[in-house]
Image (tube, rainbow, N blue to C red; front, side):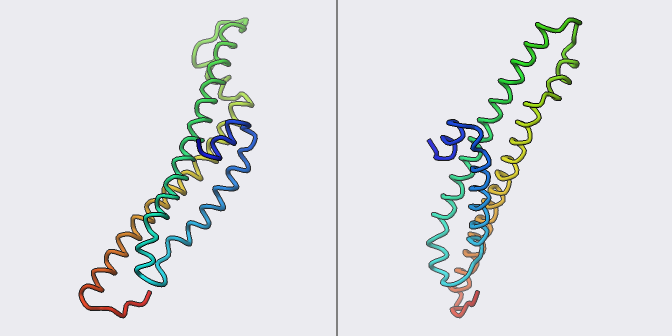
Length: 152
């Protein structure tokens, strides 16, 4: 199991540490998008960089799913609570309104939103690595065409 997913499963209150970690990783990864220095080194490092960042994206997806499952569980228990304890007849829409306004639901949705934001940033990293691969491929083609003095 991934380190940060395990940390969340052990104690969901560790979410601020996890978000902070992934924000730092994202900022480091933005520098990895740059093509600079030796072309062969850039080409050889790209697969491992992509794999590392994609693995982090998958961990973020798992953390997001963990909180989605928790949200569904809380919604379900609140729904049953309102159905069984309400002194007046509530329809499904009324119950949904009460559930959406519950403090725990709102807090959990805000956490999910923060995680989704980080996840989306890591998705953009994937797109950036794809573009970097395309650009490196073009630079190699230029070298093959005889333009050896390519300065980046």
